[in-house]
Length: 176
Image (cartoon, rainbow, N blue to C red):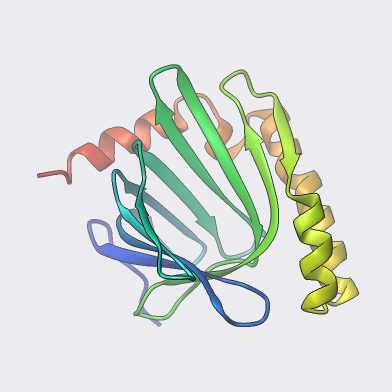
């Protein structure tokens, strides 16, 4: 199986548990692509929602996907610091069309001072019932909320000092 190579432009497809498309990011530059990890960068990319509406991201972002963890992390570079939006999701898969994952509603928003909040618990409960999330998925996701918040507290992975800045500098080398 091939993986996206450094410098490749890829799409990111987010699905819901029922298999329906949730959201598509039109263009992300691959900064690292391995069997376990994809790190990408984008800025002002078009995002298409499941209902066809589109919008454009407002700031540069570095995206971190892992094939073993049930979350992905987006570090958004703003004038007042780095904000992180973390989606509780299935591990990513790459199928030569796009990087794909299942979005499981729960999100963790992390502020520049590394404080964080858990978002969308109500939406998660509604979808868990509507789409019949298995109990094992519920346990996995709750365990990964703990893993993710532990990473924040330990400044691990994308939360480490200089992680986002270092990858953003690499991203800038690919901009025309």
